[in-house]
Amino acid sequence: MTIQVNSDKNIQASESFITKITESLHDSLSRFDEFITRIEVFLADENSEKQGSNDKRCTIEVRIKGQNPEAVVATADDIGLALKQATEKAFQLVKTRTDKLKSHS
Image (tube, rainbow, N blue to C red):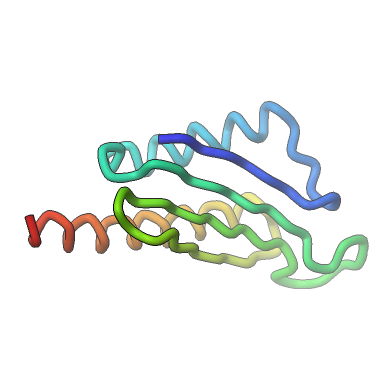
């Protein structure tokens, strides 16, 4: 499973932060490792320098073998919280899709 992290110019994604994201996603989704080929994370601050609520966005695109890519999105006041919420949504998405694949086998 390949995990790639991207951020817009308003989010400072240091190497340690990217490592933390990668490890967190791997821990959460490793049980589906045989099904997932790639995960892409997109981090963005929708309001740039302005303050606002729910302006940090995390999009996680999951590519499951033999399926079209699917994405989940979460927004929050904090990028860490948006990441956590998006990871939970990605887990549910992958669980649902892999359960369907297993039942059709």
